[in-house]
Image (cartoon, rainbow, N blue to C red; front, side, top):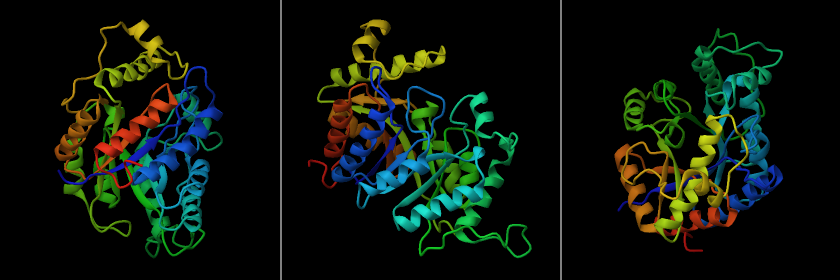
Length: 340
């Protein structure tokens, strides 16, 4: 089997009975573990007005993660651009790149990262930004990152600072809609969030590659897929751990935001017969299994999408089970340092 790069998307999950401070401390520790294990990237998510995820400000958390690691790329997965000025985001990430040259990824999403009322609060004082303006926001952001405004453009003389020898890698994140089209047209990287969409996004990755136009950001297309994965020593244990996330999703759908429940609590409510989606199902939000099962499924998904990099999202109630999952995945997939 070919070597596949693995990255991490960390939402800084808050377990029931835990605190947001616990979650952020665990984010810092997990980043160090991921680097030792050989993961390629460490992306911080953006969520608002929720008790379940402590990651609300990637631009604040990224430098802290980068400062406790050495070589792993660190970035956003992603910044919800509709809430912010493209110039502000460009300058935030130019500053990060100046501090940590050659290590910073700027992943951009167009989802609100919260409910409609929260989105209005984030845009307080500026008025609502129509989602139809998102492509223009990304285009302006890319131009400020690469100094690509043409003569006569109204922003030509507005320069994003600071100036440094390198710029962040720009990625567009998507779970449906037109994100793949925009990423191809704008010439940036594209990462499909299967763990959010619950859909098979292989067609969107193909569309991205077909529409890709070389740009100052990137000469060739680069695509990855975000997958929810829980790996344990046995399939039964992996499925038991996965029940926490299933109950959390059910509660969120009914407006109950209590954090990530324990497996015992989850199985008591879901019923002992509950199991996660079967392995081999295209578009499944969750892959849960033992190391051999997870290895085979990750290779299958990578081949199905035609990508050589997967972004792993692991959410469990128990911190040690979460770390163990990343360790087992790294070892099963043959990452350098994966058995350390």
